[in-house]
Length: 200
Image (cartoon, rainbow, N blue to C red; front, side):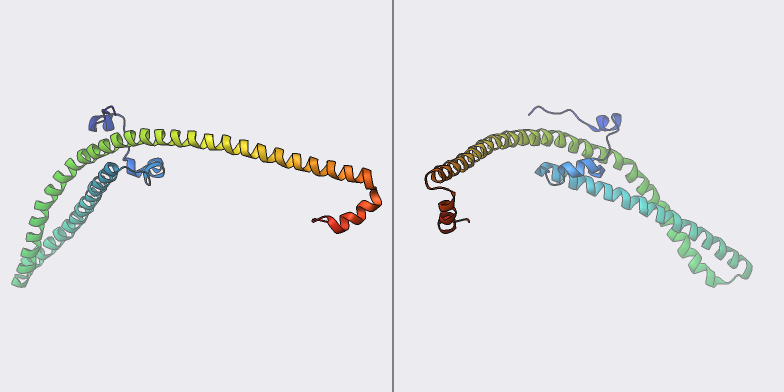
């Protein structure tokens, strides 16, 4: 099959959505994925899950940082006013935690900056594989539709033959009945019908 040129730029330029989030893609391909599509979907899900996880971690850390800043402010005031050294340890702990947060947040931001590109790359791979799989399925379905059409023609022919057979038999029953009626008469026929017909 001809190679399909779809890359990250194509995805951005044409604003192609994340395929695994689109209802039509889910309906058409969730049960008809090729092996390579299944692998790509798995990679894409991993990246999207990682992005979500990092975004949540960033929110949590920023929230925690605000809490710690308020805590440091409060502890510093208490320490200045009372000279109570009991405030030193919690103050130091809060400052250390903020240092860790300040170190972690830029790491998260850096990862979050590269993830959209990785996601678009995998989405581009999935789109290429989807195009390929679409044509495979179109061809398979066309062949199956042709076979089904042949079966319909055969079934129609058999049905027409059966209908004709039924018509012929009903006509033969009428003719036989009519023949007997003309020879032996209506009264005799009624008595014979009672004794000899299977379906009275």
